[in-house]
Image (cartoon, rainbow, N blue to C red; front, side):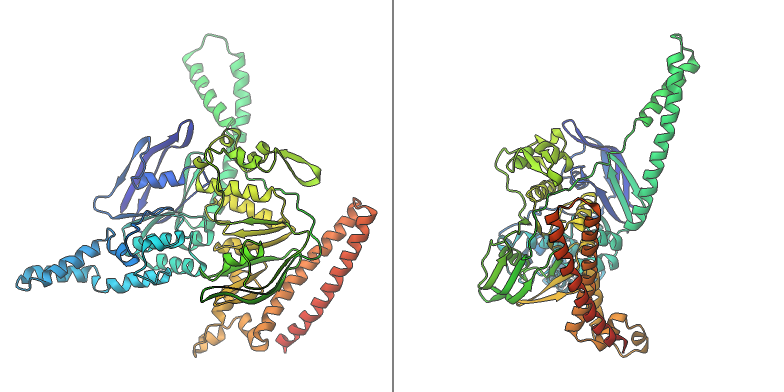
Length: 619
């Protein structure tokens, strides 16, 4: 059953064409994701589907009587209402059913009207409406139902908007980045909710695990054209690669044919027959195909990282509270070179406060934060860029200089740097307020990296970035030789780039977990109480077997040692490669020799301890 049809719609802003004559349909029970680069018209397309914008041409046809709901990135809510009042002020058909039933109760003599109202309550399962909306609100951490909307944070307002559309149970739900402002626990709950509910979805999201687990169809908007993939995200990746290879082969074939036809065109006399005119028409079609180029420009990230000394960052018994709420309680940690730490935890447990204390923007109530003399922080915050009125894109970069230093003493102009971040010369002179949310994030990332930090702190860096830019950022971070501390709800991103986690449990409790997010979920699941069934006992994981022979702290140490040994081995190989290159001065050779011996000693100590713990598991 078709719910909505998009027929040959186009959209442009001045000379900038977002898309032209695209068509697709959304059918009942489909869960469709729209994928596109930032600035190519994702949000505009969603706004056209929901009537917030008009297409330049074409039309949107929706099935008569279906209920469509839209969750935008900037929900507009009545600030004078409470959380609960907002639910009851929404366009929910169940509320009409409940109101009719309550009116029927006031007139008990009208048995026919009462019977109809009663049957509708059964039909819409309206008896449990209060339970249903409270469950959803509580899952999204909106427990204080009497709290005014005006007192909510931006993230809470987004979650209230999400709760409202879920409670309304529309036939078709259109979502723009639904996982933004949700913590990991909420995202996993939302995944399960969408999998079990009979609901039709059309969404924009950059969360690749969410895409894989929820969506059964991918629509990609690329170079103004639409490509459809009927399958999961992993299916889309396979089929897109095959499509790109096929297109490249087709272009190569057209180029060969074009050379042949071009020679024929040059040799033809001025008088043309009907047959030759047809061949001439074909020639121009072949020419267009032969000159077709894929716009595969990607963000290029490169920095001239400041040299890092032996002392990095030390946290000694730091504590922080706001009134009665304890966020950190005597937390201690000494950072080492090249560490890659992810921070996870529910909203409000102190993650951003922790980052602000490290960078000196907030003082701890007790304890010390000691930063090494050579450490240069690059801090990517959730607040992003705050441009001055009338400021252009290139003005933002020129605040850091007309020329920016790169590796090996090279310089690059502000304009060239912006081109590496996918801002062409024309776009560089646009006003900053014209940029999309993703383009703003990309520009902000540029301003953080050009300062050449050796300790990167990223607070929710994946919000609003498109998947292409995310892949480039991940590749850059994997090669980044400095320290990395990142808060993110993007599980795919965390799994790919971090070695271990700080788990913020709340009430000042922070655990150092040796592994990435998937390791953590496996551990948490295995730590749940076992049932008494023989089947579950037979399926105990290696991690559970390990937990019977090692204490909790030993388990953490064991996993941490594996990561440390691997890291030390990589550092050792890197220094040995530098010796072989012959590019080191005598002074650098001496310095590197001492550093190499230190790495070897540390590796031997950790390996010996790893064998001690491994022998306990094997006993």
